[in-house]
Length: 74
Image (cartoon, rainbow, N blue to C red; front, side, top):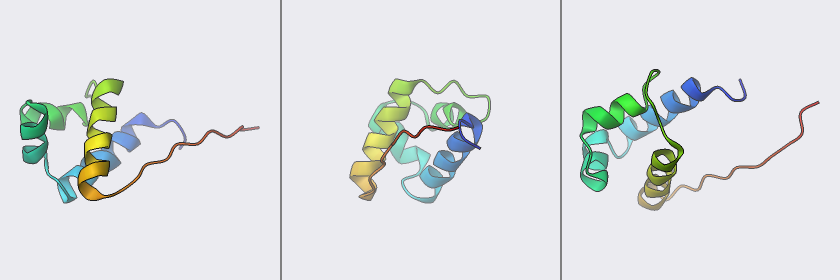
């Protein structure tokens, strides 16, 4: 469903768990792994700056590229 933040956070959380891991992220960002896991949880308060920083790190580390495009919905 477009705009479903909880689903997006869950997918990103699963991706982090399957690749880098929250322990490695905690070292990079200077936050506890539990804090980072909560951020990406259903009730987490994920700020845009944190989201973009994590995505940027994952893109560089994992060699993936995220593209965002707009489209008009009727």
